[in-house]
Amino acid sequence: MNNNSKILLGFLVGAAVGGALGILLAPDKGSETRRRIVEKGNDLGDSLSDFSDTVKDKFNDVVDGVKSTFSKSRNSMS
Image (cartoon, rainbow, N blue to C red):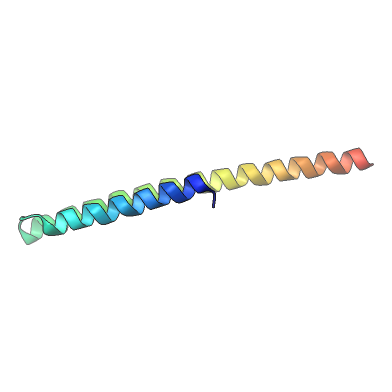
């Protein structure tokens, strides 16, 4: 994982933990707190899904670049 991915993942985890602590320490009714936890969990799941898609796209770009470089090198040796 490159440095930017690590920073983004750390930010997402920190935001999730901070949000969860904020909700748990807020003086709301239990049902309201549970609803908010579910919403934040869904938001985190969506964010992680987007992050996963971004990582997959970057990985595929790198693989395509390596394949292209390998193909060019192989053709130049022929």
